[in-house]
Image (tube, rainbow, N blue to C red):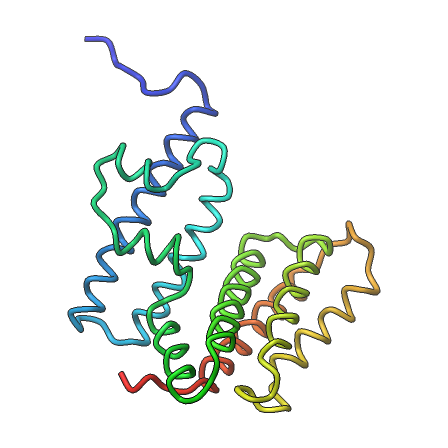
Length: 215
């Protein structure tokens, strides 16, 4: 019996492999959301895994933008019943734990604008860390991401974060360093590792500085 192939060339095969990866990310996110709601995972475990899935989704979704213009249609075509995952990955873009902290800011007297700025900062942290992991380390790739992050952190002012918040200083230092390099220059392996470490430690400090939601 002759073998039936789903693809005609390597490009098509890579596309179907990416479809399979996207399917897996959506399914995993849906299971994670349900596990969190049922209190089967801790908040810290949920947040770490959710951040990883969001970062993976953004990278893959960006690469598939021409072939998967609508995530909802993709889910429908492959019979994926995953409303919680689609909301988390496409609509919210941040873990539920971050949404809870944002809600705590609003209920504690903070503005909805502050809550939105927190979510925006988280998204920029995720994007920057994931890009470095993917070896997108040319100056003209890294600088815009850090610039967006710096702008988001500035929007928060000193009301939510301490005036000496280390994340602001580290991001500014990296921007100053990149400004002295050429657009096509790339970070060395050691510089890339240090940048990722600085981003990760700044993100952890950022989350720790936010009000708890009480959950």
